[in-house]
Each structure stands twice: as structure tokens, then as C-alpha cells.
Image 1 (tube, rainbow, N blue to C red):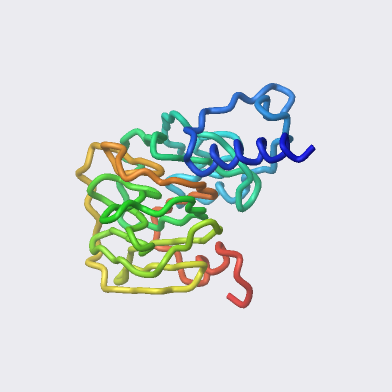
Image 2: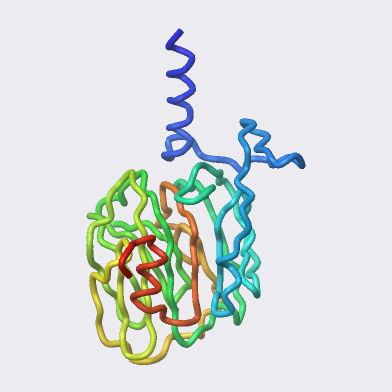
Length: 244
């Protein structure tokens, strides 16, 4: 009696953690995932109404950008699974999520934040991308677990664990560029007051733009990109901490 359950669990783990490439699951009109019959979390995305959002992805069984001025996104070889809040997108080393280039991505200041669940560490000497706009701003996790934030300067700090949800954030604006892990600031350096805007390559979720390398293996939820540098209190609240 135990064997069928074990086989199902093994198959699910292989799909989630990159041993088998995930595929885009079809959603039927009844509001259930037609691949396994589970109910879909259809909670409204109230937090995507902020006028300062450049991009807003809750990945509630959809790759649609819910920001006030949405970006066009094309994607392949991905799936959905239980996230930090509702659903999350599941990516592996064959997934692609390309954000089409537009002036929406050209910003004077920036915040990138997300919940990430790393299922596999980067290869030796490598990194895994969370969000990258080529030549402008980016967030990666380096070999060894350091969070790498690039927006003017490049900061590498901390140690992102495997197999657990971690809130990560990078901000750049005003006079400072800062990095946060689980709502706590872990690094800050002076910021020169401007970001490059000349790139025409667009962006990439879960990898490097524009070539799609440095793939993230695991799950990403509640990805936000703002055209402002959010405050430490705002990042703390986004990470769900108390006493902010």
C-alpha cells in the first residue's frame, strides 16, 4: 500500500526540484488545475496596485504582469506549485521567462524584491538569476549562497539557504544602495544617483538577460520591481516581520 504513495511523492519532488523539466500546466475554466485537480488560489492581487511598480508577479497560476502598466512576458518550460503565499512559479535549468524591452524598465531608482525557494545551489563559480535587466539592475544568488545585487555598484553578501523560503531585496536610489535578507538590512554602500538606461535587451526572470543562462532552480513568489528605492520599514513589512 505504501509504494504508490512513494512513487507519487518521488515524481512530485523530481518536477519541483529540477530533476525533471517542468512544463506549463493547463488551467481549465472551472478554476482548477487540470493537471492534478487542485483548487487555485484566486485571491485578488491588491498589492500590485502601487503606481511605483515597474513589474508585479504573484504567479497565481499565471505569468501575467499585474503592475498598473504591465510588461509583456513570454515564457516556456515552467510550472506552478504551492508558494509562500498562494501559488509560486517553479523553474529549472531549461526554463525561460523573458520580459520584453520597453521604456517601462528604464528607471532612475529601483527596488527588486521576491520570495525565493532555492532547490539547487549554483554551480561552482556560477550564479542563479532572480531578476535581470541587462546592463541596468539585477539580482542573482552566487555560488556559496551570497546574494548579488547590481544597480550602479555590485554587492555580494549573505548566504541564501536551500529548501526554505527567503525574502530578498535590493534597493538603489537617493544616496544609498542596500541589500536586505528576510527584511533585515545586511549591506549598504553609497549610490551615485543614477542607473543606466541604454540597454535594449529587456529583462529575464529566473536567469541572465539576454542569453537565458544562470538559471534559477526552485520557486519564486511575489516578485516586485519598483521605480523607487523602498525604505527599510517597507522592506521589513514586505518580508512579514513584526516590529517594523
